[in-house]
Image (tube, rainbow, N blue to C red; front, side, top):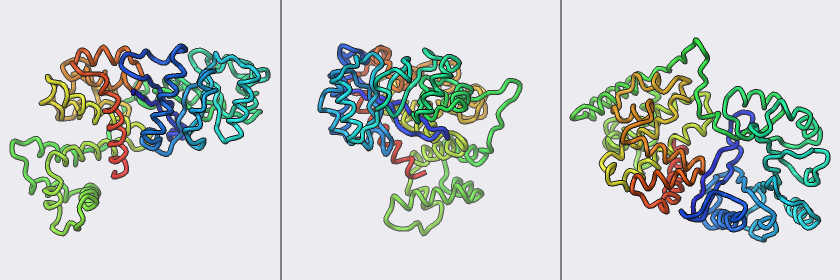
Length: 402
């Protein structure tokens, strides 16, 4: 089973929920009308069997439903406190459907109208709907002003979909939208004529330079860490959590317990966390999921097996431009990393780049592209769904510790 998820943000750019996009196997097409019932059953079964918390955590799960899937009893597998029912725009509205939606609404399920193009005043489902989604490409903001005002008057929650830039996010929020979906959060905000100011990452640069020596020194690393009490404290804290005994012998002991490989990964994550101040938490979560997913892909790809750590780092840094509000070329300028990583991120080429492209295809539920890249890499795409779920779980554990 393949389940991709796309974040839905509130007005403060905190994640409110995830829309779940899915298919049953590597031979299925993307979500479409002919397979909607079976696909919805698959994702609801997955939510129930895998556990909703492992897919969306404590957030809401937005799932698309057509007429037949709305009539099925599979909806009740998922608790109404988690599931938001998205009624597809082409659903035929009849008395039977209205009775079912009214019943679901009374059970506590929240109902969203997907890709809404109808009249707020006339469309029969509006009275039982809680959320109304507008696709900003199909229905630009300047064409729906009156409808938006009427929806707000009726106390509906408005969700702007396909928000691709910060400017669109701000405009939609100003108009009255409360929820936002799209890739605006993962793109840099670059103002013409100005360059983003890079945060001070001197401590991390010194640590990484030591780690890249032929024979890195635990003592040398400890001495570098002693110059920054914040980073040193975080290291001791994370090592203490993983060991029953307190760290009594100082920073060098903490480093030895962690090991150089895990320490380098931890340094990269801490650096990204410091760089992502005032950015949505989902940005670093995306980088972590991509990092683990890329590592799992590389470990199972013959040509990249020995380069899994490079692939992981490439995916981890794939949103660095958005974190710094710089072009990717500017963001990469001062980092001591391999030319293949830089080529993948800046030029979108080279031997490592297909793994990043694979991760992005999965996030966007572009199943056709996913299969094409997986085939190119010599990977059985049936395994990708499991790796993606493993990556989500891993990122959640990391986020708890940082």
